[in-house]
Image (tube, rainbow, N blue to C red):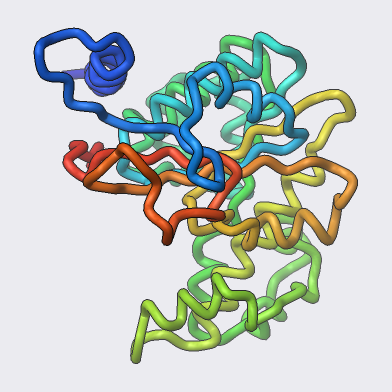
Length: 292
């Protein structure tokens, strides 16, 4: 099966599940997801899109292997592109691959060449290619916002001082240094706690490097009058921290809307632990199949 066929099949499965949920087809309907606001109030699809459209910058937090989140990302991108000027960006493509991404968007290289030349995630074909292809079709900018992974790996071992050896050319792919960093942010403290004995302050600094770099490239590509829709793992924007913390420091005048994706067994209500995690929370059934 070719890559485009796989993408079509994956999107079809997610859309069918959502259709059955929304229309009530069948004697017994198994809901795939429910939309909530940050306080746990259920949202209609229309209300969801209106809240998203009210933002200047939208941080769409996902679980990387969740088909419902990926499908809704495409739905949101199409809706926003119909409402006005739009810029797309993603954690899943690194800043030093921007030139290759731009060549693909301009039609100078095909999908196979893009996949060969850029360090794309293994699930790019099923989960992110539709977003990139939408940008290509609509002539929308698409920004590769993440720091090159080799720099993040170096920081995870040696802390921010590992960046001191970067050349001037390499510094163009990283947020300006020195990197602002608050180790007492709850999200970073939770990260250390989750890693238990394996966690180190340097690993948290590597996370902050990613957050700072993604925020930096978002701010560098904000266009007056246009929305910026950014795709990232939920952890990078949960509780308005991570990328959001850096955006607040850089562009406090812009409205940032956050979306988180969570898993629950019961979709009738939002569990207490997820309340306040984002402005909009996509609550997906724990039984949802994964994309990889």
